[in-house]
Length: 597
Image (cartoon, rainbow, N blue to C red; front, side, top):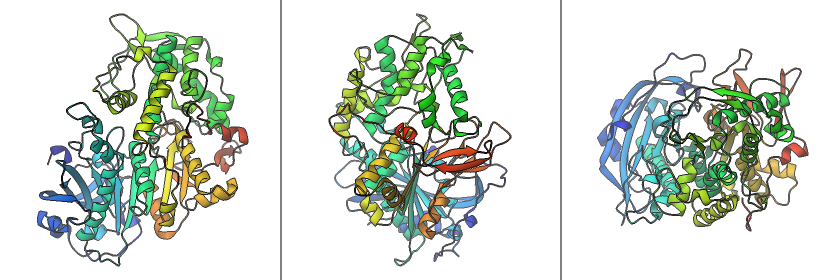
């Protein structure tokens, strides 16, 4: 087993927010009196393997690795509170498919028998990774659930799908794409549920509640399961899903396209200065000045970036970034005033992808998202600034669509126009409609199976536009209940599916000052599934703050209700927005002959 798979944990002194398994709903299991030592052995896990769970799957019994972990403490996550004194069995094993030369590794944490609460949790990844490794697994054992993740067969838990998406002859590996698209998570879940039943000696009459939790690419993976496998999960917690995959990945190239097309390259410091003013202007529109934008819809209606013409800016030099997802060279010190050209690129970035004839290609960012995709890079040799190709879009265009390896450039990018981007999106959409787009709007089978979905998205997300989540929710509502009024169809869909915009939050994390983030989604989902408690609002925690007058917890409004503050910001209500504000979230993607769900 690679050393990166060995169990590790963060040790800290816990405060009042600490959560232990005893805080979760109780459940009975026949192994409750059994010690962890007696079951966390190679022999016992080998006997518990789900060898007959999936036809055509062959588990390598000799690949099993097992170690017991005692009294672990976890802290610092945005997705679960700090907790302590958790013991679990750390298990990995590999499997293959009959007739293929593949190897896929699964990784599970199974709670100590005394803490098991008849629950299973699958987790997902981010970016081009199908796994978040052991960053998400603690959120399962904290609530008495065994938790699992998969490497997808991509060569280890630190590998990405892009490492395997092209075969040796340069053609696309469709087996890899389909594993990434939905198959590997499904197999993780089916085998994880059976492993859990076997490990804890659950009889067939005992309910095992099954859940999913992940964000970003992991959010798309969650929808891939809900849409295809209605019986896999009782509840799915889906954050900022990178769905509508071709649109999502390639829209990251939009800012670079317009910079190249118009030959305008704003300095990053100028865009940062504009963004600071955007937050200052839009912050109080919800009725409370607290350092974050809670009503980006009102911001879109009232904001005029030309008000910031002539704004002074100054930034110190920065070192090179080694972020593997978006490496950047060093930048020199920058100073000056915001120009009309700076504002033009900022406006085009916020407006989102359009064809040259003005037809809309995709949804746009909210004003709080910033201008990350528009950041330019400095050439120390020429002294010039130029566009930077965001890696998600670069990889998808070159490897997935064109089926060729890439380094840091698209060879013909200087010739791209907005129409080139539109056509590339359409090409990728058609090529991967059945596997990566992940926008099937009819969730009737999942609803009929009793499944529940908590879907959340940071309103200032700069990686996945929150309007993409709004579009999907509205597609589900209108597809499943076409004959009902808006209010009646909303009530019907909310019986099993609720969506929340997270005020001020960035991509799968708190963003602006005092942002409340939904850190306790799993216990909320447990209450909805196991006790029937409807999450009318979603509990959120201010994980970090930059002011002294913040609330430790907040309640997020269920879409389409929006937050409004009264009495000098001391009272919050969730209210229907007016028509103009609601319509800022609704887009006519008329650049394509087909409807975009």
